[in-house]
Image (cartoon, rainbow, N blue to C red):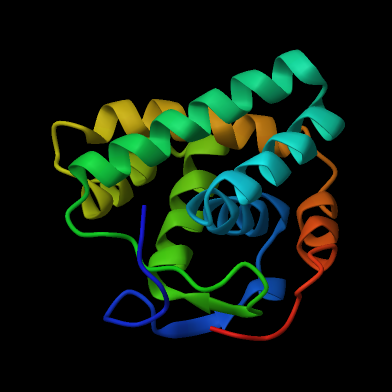
Length: 159
């Protein structure tokens, strides 16, 4: 997934702090994943620390497959803000809502949102992955992703 906070999906629609734990984690992890190897290593470290190696690995694999499918079959690239940004972009809000719906068993809503992200034939697959990823996030302490965000050395409110 690529793109920064410009374009139609990058418009700020809220603040990251307004999201619940699963939603905030999904946005922060999307940002970290999109930042490349260093961000992905931070993501793995956080998941393995909070979920244990096995559950963390399964959660990471679901997220990796989800991101890869969204990148390959997305309707357009998802726009995102920088990891340390406090704003919540429109695409990020959609992604967070998608993960939260999938994680709480609202499968019809999750499938509908999935069709906004990817082609309709890919929607069931990413919904299943979002469920697996979201359930992993629900097992975590909700503050962990916010702590991770604050631990970045270059933390600033940039877009």
